Image (cartoon, rainbow, N blue to C red):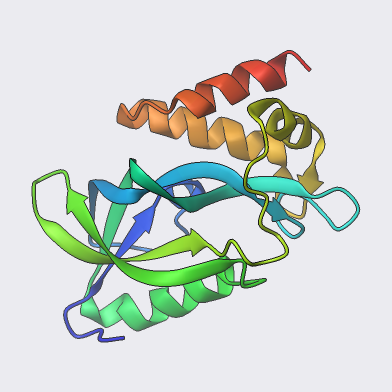
Length: 178
């Protein structure tokens, strides 16, 4: 990875509301060919081995796109931030780190570090119905807190940004009814 021009990072879940690193700028961005989905069992942060939670992943999806936030980190901090992200996002290697094209809100296209799901990983939980996702999210709790808090924080921050995510809205309603 080259750091002399800085790096771009794409946040679509907790990186939106808890990036955990300093950045020089940020703006909304769109990643084509992927959907934001609760498709990864969490046995560390939002669940445990006995009762896994679910966290978001970028799932490949033809014809779809995911709106989120692109962070730019300047050259001076890029290597350190990248190392932080690898420690955070690759804790169990259920995500794959990829450099993918993002369309920024200002119209530019940049290459950004994205963490997409590995569908071959044992923690992959693709294909769960929204009702099944809601059941898991409502009950799971991990080292950093309740799985429901993760859903609520992500949904609230997407709404603040004006990003419409119908699955998030549906999951909020379903978890409230459990």
